[in-house]
Amino acid sequence: MDFLLLLPHRARVVIECDGKQHYADFDGRTDPRRYAAMMAEDRDLRLKGYEVYRFGGADLTDDQATEQLLSAFFDRLHERHRQ
Image (cartoon, rainbow, N blue to C red):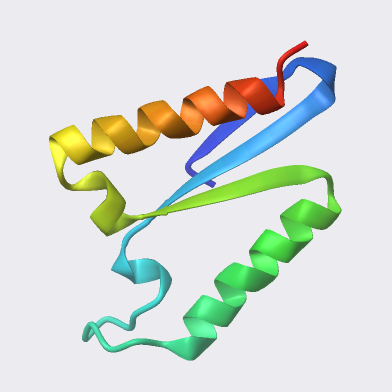
């Protein structure tokens, strides 16, 4: 897990920033087993009561677009967990 946010009312939010190591082998080829393992971890976290949000590496490479994306995401997350 890249980030864990502990919010009011016991909300636990996991934020993952996925580079290609999450879905590709060391040669850069897609690896369905790696991806399946990542999804299994997501399911396990969700069953334990965590919210899981993933961002792909490409989401985080353009400074202006990334700032807009994250700003909108955190605004929506805030709305979801407002007291």
